[in-house]
Length: 375
Image 1: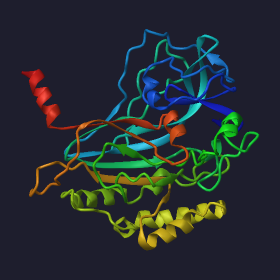
Image 2 (image 1 turned 90 degrees about the vertical axis):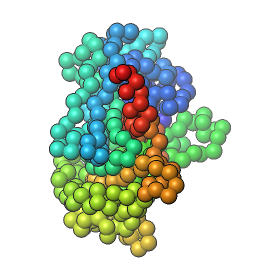
Image 3 (image 1 turned 180 degrees about the vertical axis):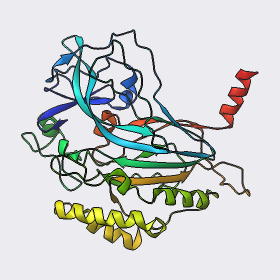
Image 4 (image 1 turned 120 degrees about the vertical axis):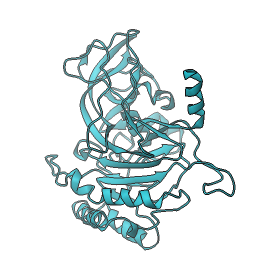
């Protein structure tokens, strides 16, 4: 892809600006969790940024990402979308592996008390200035648990594609981020846009696909900043009312068959009023981005789409107790699932940057295995 006149090439689980590649772009699927394995690259590229010392191939110890774990039946914490400078990104070219200093956007985790999760150990030899790329924190819960996650978008949009949903990133000879030879042979595809807009999609969850559940249509824009990149709305302001919301959500979803929240009015006024204020300010600053107009229409009969800065996720991972019981006839499947940013138009570039992580849901199968190994 070409963004701001440069090719973006998937390497590991990150995105690297480089000169025109000598191969075609491949599938992203095999690279989702490749950040833990240094020196992986899908094709030859030639870095524009200065090269730095790479990790030594074949001598790296696999290190699990940090975890947010459920306790007392609730998985709680925060997923923060951040941009990080000075990431050491491996890539291959001219038959050898090189590394470059890049900027990426990725997920970072914090506990419910606001404590930052530790980062993974650096690859060896460690670099004195650069960090090594890593995915978001692993989420670990159990069947029957409640998920309560605060999502905050702290990306500085001044550093990335400014467009939203209504037009494409217009670069390149034909006004596209796609190679010219692609356009000569195929119809114009959906285009890259709003790469700083995000949400969280939880693959494998058996839950409400609307409101504050696993809603892939949510579009959370970054916290507002001025032209110098200084935050004009702080995280605490954008998340005001979340504690009240999570407390009520705990009560309402004791029965996982209860669909709650169902309307915008179910959420605390402290948060919804702040969202209206932020959306109106956004529209005044960017008059061509009619986010509030669309939200206002949705408020009449549906769930709003656009948000500024933060969003609360709360949903059940329902247990299964058979027909006639208090639980649904189909419940949450345990297993190793995953989550990622799901913004239509920029899902691939977001996942490649590192906006993804594992979601492990344990159940009776895990208990039986643990008992067998202990016996």
